[in-house]
Image (cartoon, rainbow, N blue to C red; front, side):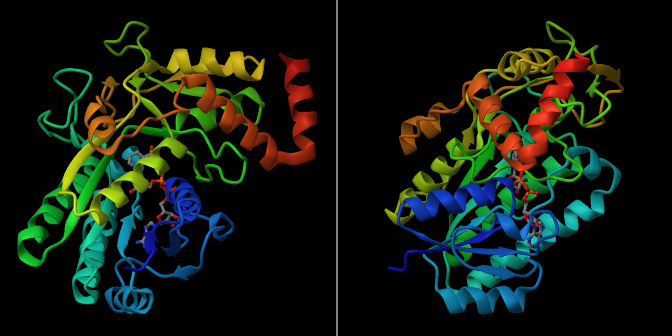
Length: 340
Ligand SMILES: NC(=O)c1ccc[n+]([C@@H]2O[C@H](COP(=O)([O-])OP(=O)(O)OC[C@H]3O[C@@H](n4cnc5c(N)ncnc54)[C@H](O)[C@@H]3O)[C@@H](O)[C@H]2O)c1
């Protein structure tokens, strides 16, 4: 069997880390990405095929050409707020585009899929930690787009033999521990990179979106999971499929929730810098608390997330940020310390 894996969205944050993990595990990753939200420079492991998942002819040709044993499908838009203001963009890309991918897989005879889903499929949880059996009631178009894809993927199994491991991530964070890869979103929607840039004085303080949530300190609680731990889970899910394991959906989180204030405190510990911040409005579509129960992924896949302590995740992201900023960074830290 081929050791090639086509990785849609391989230029993105999680996809690029998955490509590294694939290469280290002896697979041959091929990135398929339109580079709309991920940089070419993040494709360090295996070839890059520039293309859109909605371009079924091109994608079918790429799949026929490489004859992969599986597809890992990361390509999507993933900003909750943007999905609320422009839902059709999300349904077009995440649903129509992904249907294009499934058509290409069917036509090229590729029947193994690892799919990036999200805790946003659950909506506002009735209980935490959230297990896979928790009712799904997404409260934003982004979560709805992923829920629709989960359903569509499930419908393809009896129809033409698609088998899939659906991975519902909580909040991906951190960066490659070797410093080879990081997070490159513009604008950056995720908390930890924004906290670090606030520490460096690279933005006018951190905006904390809501301090009046029904949580102990009033700020939103999230479950942060290291991107390299997520990448490892993808390797295990792939091997599960290649060993003829059944289709399933699994949560990937670390099981501990941290509030925005706790993340800021941890970042102050890691960087030694204060985090300037101010209160902003709640973001539409943001549930107060999302914490996952990943017992099934640990039990079925044998997954052991080793880098998902909060301080470790922030330290890896911090190291990568310093690396990206290179020499001027030293000056920036010194300047931030002086004005602190
Ligand atoms: N980052 C998180 O915390 C998180 C949490 C849960 C789920 N997810 C899911 O994980 C996946 C990856 O997230 P990420 O944070 O790495 O996102 P990202 O934006 O960094 O990467 C997505 C990549 O997909 C590419 N892409 C987007 N639309 C495309 C299209 N139509 N055709 C080809 N390429 C396209 C982009 O150029 C980018 O390189 C997404 O499906 C996202 O919904 C992410």
